[in-house]
View 1 (tube, rainbow, N blue to C red):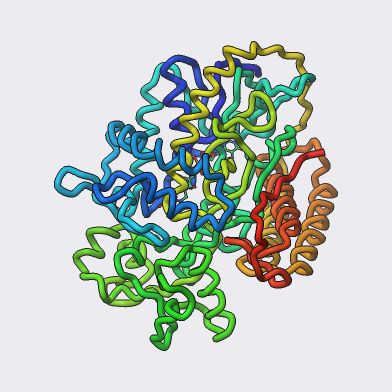
View 2 (view 1 turned 90 degrees about the vertical axis):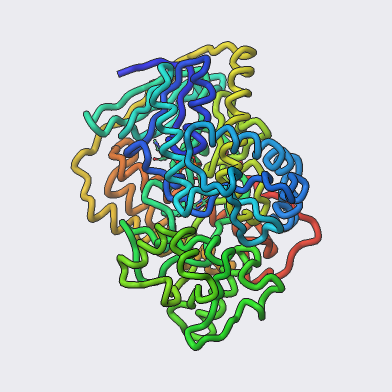
Length: 520
Ligand SMILES: Cc1cc2nc3c(=O)[nH]c(=O)nc-3n(C[C@H](O)[C@H](O)[C@H](O)COP(=O)(O)OP(=O)(O)OC[C@H]3O[C@@H](n4cnc5c(N)ncnc54)[C@H](O)[C@@H]3O)c2cc1C
């Protein structure tokens, strides 16, 4: 089957939906999403969206905090754009009937690690769900936009001049391949932390966008920077993902302690629990390793019970379901893979290095996070750069009329794949990444990680030769490719900076540089 539209969006999280909403004012757009329309990282965001909207705040202060967290690697121009354009876009989001928490008619603002001011706009502790639902409602009601659920995008179609003219997707509902052509393709396919054994991300976060962009010839940047969130609930998962205890809990006064009651973060950083995430995650990792602990405790006893229940109702309720009353007991926590800073390299307008392909949100790397993302800057980055990409696509397509010289896509459906074999290979990869590309890395372990991935690729190819397809096989191929790219990037960085800590190179080089990978 073949379809045509003006714009294709891969993914229905904040980046994809904001882009679709913006271009649908003038053009036809199809949003393809591989599961249900709200299956996204966006839907799970808790803390909120950082924006300098408070009376004591300014974009300049937000920029300073962003650059401090980024450890010398932020693209200053991109970061400046994000903090300056962010407040207006957050106000525009609010107009889409998103029920942000307010106080005396203004946004109620939270604070998280690394922020010098209260600037986290939120909807209690389910900000992502509120944003996702608000945007879905808006896009669904547009006559120009169509959301196509259960459409797994396999690859980008490139003509013989090197320009992208569409995608090949698989409709899971009727088991059909569909080729869709468009003037421009927006990759908004989210993150990759499902590559890790312990992660706060849902199953959709398999790095598909990075993998397909790489196969299409796009450059990838800074993939070694994977953010580990310091506090996920110990010993409990929901559909395979670790349950996040938002950083905002520490912002409200939560204190990290060892099980015997020692407050340890004061030994590691002057800002203690409010230190940047990489510092807190590594400190917890160090406590766990040196004291042979299974978890540390997040003590909420300084926060009044009513405040806990008002600010964190979903966290309180979820913990209660696991038998924990957080108004009375400390929360056992451990770090988990949470966010990909690196991704498909883009310019300030979401353009990748291949004509016709744009990217924004977690699959993209604009440079705003440098070597470490400041809490609650990712929803903001997605919003600001999806908005800019929408403007750029409208302009670029005026300049570059599309010429298609079709290359046929060939693939045969393998509907009888053995799920247990695929799951076991995926588990091996996820353990490999956790062990060899984790919070603290070493050169020999990263090399072992690459060797193990090469073995897994061989095993998969022997079972299912290239050309055979099912969504699960394709996701695993994508995960193996992206896992190897992360390790390649990590091995290239001969220093420890921000989220990337490697034992052989514990210090920071005087000059900060990006790690750029280019497909052959
Ligand atoms: C538990 C949790 C809490 C968080 N809290 C915060 C927070 O408080 N503040 C903050 O700023 N950030 C937070 N983050 C990070 C933030 O939620 C994400 O970075 C952001 O939502 C990413 O948005 P996105 O649009 O890029 O991708 P997503 O929201 O992940 O959407 C990706 C979409 O792409 C689709 N997709 C993927 N591959 C394919 C394919 N092959 N074919 C078709 N569709 C595909 C997915 O199904 C999904 O619809 C949190 C993340 C998690 C997991």
